[in-house]
Amino acid sequence: VDGQFVCQQAYLTNVFVESETDGLDAANCKTRCISQKCPYYWEGEVMSTKQCRLYSQCTELVREIGVVGNLYGMSYRKACKVADAQLCWKVTKRRSFLGAGDDSYQCFHQDLIEQCDQKLMLGGLGVSACGGCEYAAWLNI
Image (cartoon, rainbow, N blue to C red; front, side, top):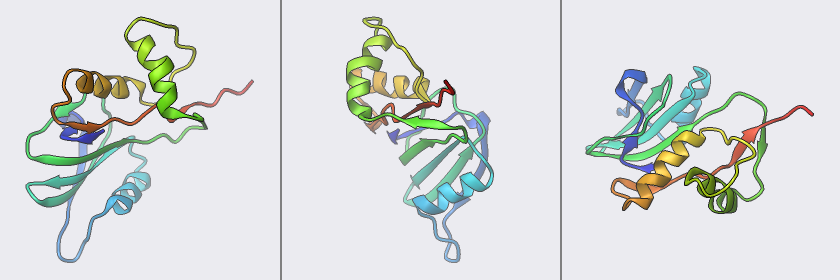
């Protein structure tokens, strides 16, 4: 999710704030998340100060005024890359979400992608862009 949305405060485990000695960028935040095996992280700015936030869970997108950044979901399971994530979302996943089609597999973080997409359909206040259905669970057939 790109914009003003983060996970619920109850699931916030760590906050890192940029200082003169400790710079923050997207790679730095992702590395911190991976080292702690966190499932979600947010990187961005809060009132012009860079922050990295790690979350233990994320079940609902929460709009936070004064923040601008990106919320990412991580997975440490085997996965399959979806060939065309945007087309998959537009043709299959969105239709299923709206009750107009079947859905044969679950994308990683699909519930959050649906929440983001719904916010865009309702005018997009606080959302610049939503991620797509990029990865699905690897099936051992």
